[in-house]
Length: 63
Image (cartoon, rainbow, N blue to C red):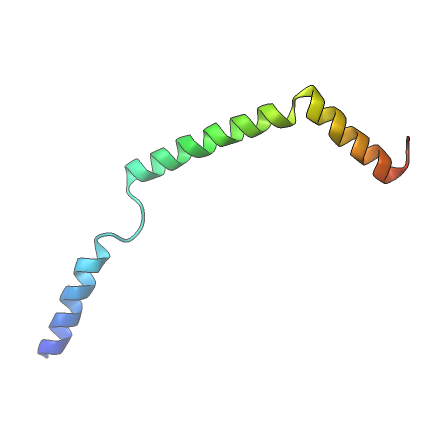
């Protein structure tokens, strides 16, 4: 019976740090939003838009 209690105590000690806390979720969300806005800004720039359209036209042989 003592061995089971020791295992349960070890499990409880390790269970405290499972997953992220609210602050970590908030920081992850802010970082993801910042990255998404930067990526959106890059993809919607005229240079990238022209490059993508040129690639699509060449792939479909519309040019």
